Length: 337
Length: 286
Image 1 (cartoon, rainbow over the protein chains, first blue to last red):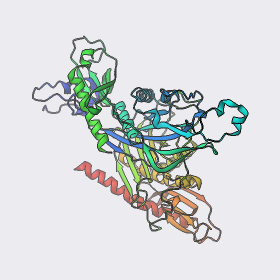
Image 2 (tube, each protein chain N blue to C red):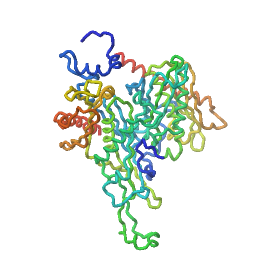
Image 3 (cartoon, chains in turn red, purple):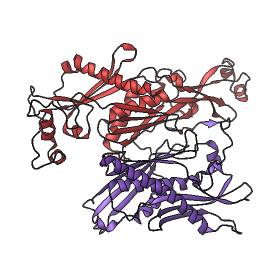
Image 4 (spheres, rainbow over the protein chains, first blue to last red):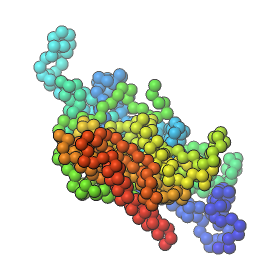
């Protein structure tokens, strides 16, 4: 180790972060293994820890911590009568979740989780992007089944006044027929307690963990009061069988300008922290689900830069890394149940 | 007009679940002695990127799961004020108190409501008296308290309108956690301020009034008055005092005794802050 001259490590990192990270990844001395500025190997991730059911007011909750990123997710269920849904169609049994907006994820970063996120203003672009990404992925991954959110009611057998006035049409309906009277709406609120890079992976893992933890109360419709009544006994858990996990990596090219040659050297840094995120333009996020032994890719998104090729994205190493990360998260989530 | 920057959910309003069967555990009475405060857990340094941070958990009741209070606080600064800000010879303190949407029985929105603004103002006065603001001219400090879990879990809390008393406890918690976070940030203070609450409780018909420390509204038939103080133990000074309620006229106890009991509660809390902070110092030195 060279004697310390001039600047300390942390000062160097602040003054010129780019060469600092490069020097760490490409040590001048061969005896030192390349590492990132946070001491991790390029593909090394921060181990996630998950805590379930820590909130008593929410129907389901999870706290996920990866390194210095901590996010808490609380899920609250509220009911909405189908009469109050403007575009309600009884025949729609396929796209209820999206059509009626039954899932409401929101991310709050402005808890002072990092110096750049202070309360007082509207949600930042990052918070809006994250909320939208979670929203999209919730729907596209088909994590939840609409039937878990339906509240059924048996139409009473006796004819009401309305039937007599309106004539044959309604009385033709089968007596004692079962129909959906209301839906549960899940408000999924994610609060960042501490922010140190890679918010999406942590937020998504917290969402999945909290949904698996969610228990909805038994509900029934009271026609006299025209409202939903619930019972405290035997809450029913949501059926969440799949476990999609998001894995993010950034690409560090060692250059500060974007116009790099195509054959340039690059490093894939898994699970980036704030410093690395600020230095890299190219991000790749893969959402996979290895439940039941088979590897299913739910989404791949890649932004900025041109380094990551299709070949690399489908390479065995990359997918194996993602599977390994899935196992980390899956065991953390199921282990805490 | 809905906020387009958030995911708003269904257009028409949704209802929180209404339960028609009673609470699972109906009768709850205070088990603690009248002058005992609930156990607390305080940890500093939960948000490494902030200058200072703290997490406070107030345990619900002995041996019971759930409820209680959970708060986090982050302190950012002192840092230079934006160019547009006018010159200030003192440190500019700004406080934000926010309930998480899942913190209380009723879901709260993301916009700050009046009770949160009120709490922020109280917290600001409480801290301002403790900070040595003239050591940091032209700089600003942001204190952000997030209430992850507030009190009044139970349905009858809403029905009996006792939430207004819980605000006192929340403020006491906010003061304590913010004080620990400021100490963690290393901002000069004359003393660590701590919050304490005392209340005058009575049975249903208003008889047998007595003063208890750290009241949980649900454990009492009725609360006549409550008082929350922010107190500096080493200087014996009160930086913020919030008193509400009505004292019965043939007062066996007056305002002063209620305030002094609240001070006693904050003395108890102060012991905990010091213990937690010295523990944090000890762990960094080793």
